[in-house]
Image 1 (spheres, rainbow, N blue to C red):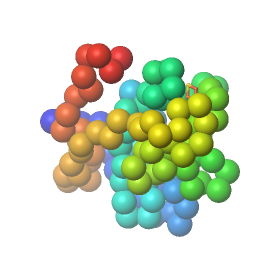
Image 2: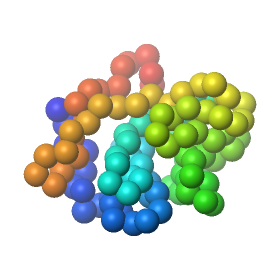
Image 3: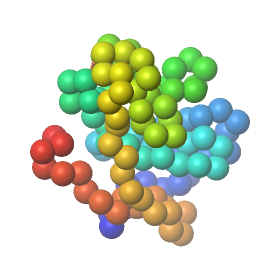
Image 4: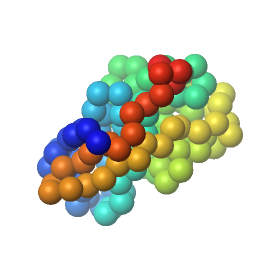
Length: 112
Ligand code: FES
């Protein structure tokens, strides 16, 4: 188990979804639900971000890769539009304890 960030860093109480990049991980918060994904697009195995750290679409309904605009569902990381349709972001197990978010699995070496 490894500390990823303090929950204060995440916009948890917003009505809209919010995202935060920490190291190689993308944290997405929708209301009271958190999702953590490895920041690696299944299309080219590049980080989803290119020039910004805003990885949600304008309506904040989907995660969007900045490289070729693939869209992923927030709840499952499933690509529903773009060059990797049907592909999936790798979801990372985590725990929240004492106001902090910990990841409970490390990414696999071949996922780099
Ligand atoms: S690298 Fe993400 S859509 Fe191409």
